[in-house]
Amino acid sequence: MESLKGTRTPLCDYITQVVDARLAVETNDQSSISHSYVFLEEQLGKGLLFILRYPSGMKLDAKTYFDLYDIIAPAISKEKTMIRPLTFQLVPIDDMPIETSVGFFFPWRNGRASRLVGSIGEILSDYDLNQEIPIMKGMAAKTNVRSYLITGNTGSGKTETFKYFEQVFSKTTNRSGTKPAKIIIFDSKKGAGSRWAKRNNPEIELIVPKEGDRPEDYIPRCNRKLEQIVSEMNHRQDELYNFSNRITTDANELDVPPIWVMFEEFEGVTLGMSPRSAQIQDLYRLLTLIALLGRESLVGLCITSQIARHDIIPIQIRSQMLVKILLGVIDSTSTAYLFGDLSDNIPLPIGGKGSGIISINDGYHYGIEPVEMPTIYER
Image (tube, rainbow, N blue to C red; front, side, top):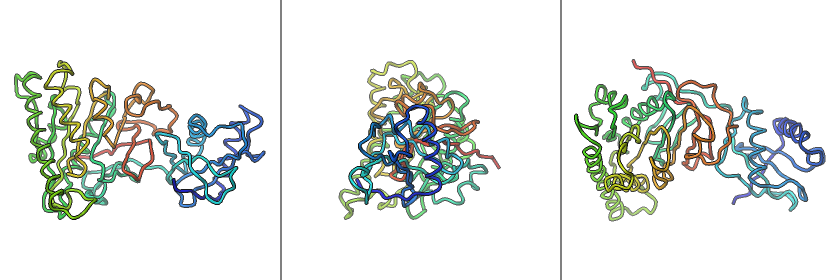
């Protein structure tokens, strides 16, 4: 791991005072006053370094890391948004003697991202959708990630979030900008996302139940469509393998448009059927292929569900979803399936629909952040 350098700033002094006050309640022998630790701002502004001086009774372990996060994040939330990594970050410190040569790294960014509000055209006017997908003002997901999982209780804003991504994805194009993306929505409930597409964007393909359909009738139709998508995905991979001279590449080189596979209320698709049935297993197999192999072929996957339980969204699918959003109630029960053993001490927005937490695994983000999804006004 690359060594990091840091400098002492007034913010570091403030953080030191905050932590000292908290630790003074718990122990008398570990404080910055006795030179046991120091806080430094990482020299490129990416985050905060906590450097412990050895020997010390304090451990550089996960508990200490997340305890410090819980103390610092609320205290500096007006000036910095501390991002909660999924695992604790132990890093080497450059230009330090051996007793202070390792420490914690807490990633942050300046200020707080804010909710995007306006018409879809107004919101997207400042972004190149072939480079990034806007989430908030100050937060966007790079398009090298093409798998989104959105969960939340009823009334959390999950449907509006689905509609937002539906509109954004439909405006992505091939590299030359001559062909729009292909959007396929699978919706067993014929919900708001499908109704919006039917009335406002007839180019979106809707895979919805026919009148009188049972799950045994609907799921095979879903699987047949997914088979076609996987076939196109494999064709694009073959094209890249046979004709591209580049080692690191994707289907943008072929100038083909993205394909977005979107499932609204995924639990409704499989409702009433055994997860062990051949039809459901085929569905899971096809979605796993898309989630695992879709990035290079420009085939994306977006799923919404009230909860991401193992019997609803299998681990092999869930583990491949690189953007994870949890809206509404944030507690140990709701976070367990997306973020594991997550405390409820992340500083969250005041509330309202579309508020929650997000992780973006695109190589530019570090962990879990608070999120407020866009508010779209119809014009």
